[in-house]
Image (cartoon, rainbow, N blue to C red; front, side, top):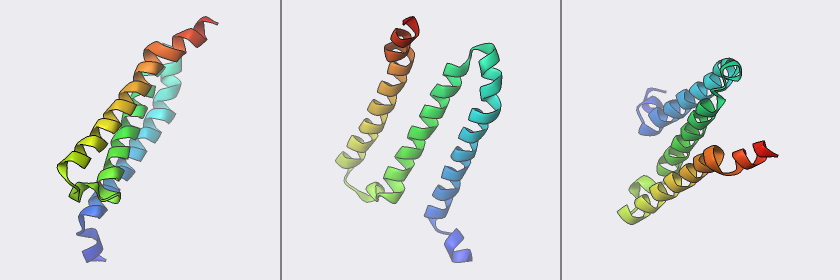
Length: 102
C-alpha cells in the first residue's frame, strides 16, 4: 500500500480529485449566490478552466505525453489552450449574446 502512494500517479490522482471537489463546490454553493448577484458567468468560466486543467493533466500523465517529444507536448498544450480559449470566448462574446437577444 505504501509503495502505491509513493508513485507520482497517486499525487496526480489526488490533484484531479481536489480539482473535482473544487468544481463541485463552485457549482453547488457559489452557483446559488451567483444567480442572485448575476456573477454566474465568472463561476462558469472558472469551471471551464478547471475542466481544461484536468484535461491537460490527463493528457500528460494518463496518456503518457509527459515522456513524449517536446513537439507533441507543445501541440497538446496548444490544443488545450486553443479549445479552452475558444469555448470561453464564445461563452462570453459569441453565441450567448445572440441567443439572449432573441
